[in-house]
Length: 191
Image (cartoon, rainbow, N blue to C red; front, top):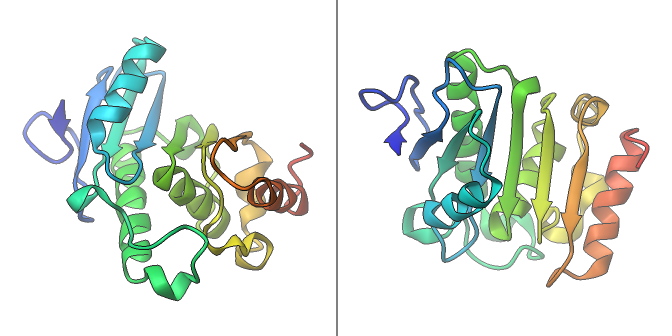
């Protein structure tokens, strides 16, 4: 595993916290995944997921939160209660995605995946900073603060145009998963 931006890392991520690169070399990768860990975890949890996937032709960028947490408080708190950590976390994920782009992997060949706190960030980024990803996996998470429809940007329709989302609601109140589904419907994904 190589830090992105380190010798052999092939790209530069300027946002802190750091991101690690693993899997297939960027020059030969069919697709790339940006895998975002949950609270109290680090990239090791996502490395376990990657090992289980056993996809040899995928490069992975693994942003890592300082102090093993992306933001304080719970996901359903008002957004003001988790700033400026939220913006910093989204910037770090954007930085990892941009670094993959700088290395020649466009957004349409990137899958954004998050677990728990990382899943909330993946959903938040997809709703408020949309890109045309190959896919987004929201594993045990939802949009932050439960205000999914209000947070969505009009340009988020670009995100859902070519992207499917998966929500696993274990441990997440069903109403929050339903809000994310309503957001996707509002933006035209046709779930």
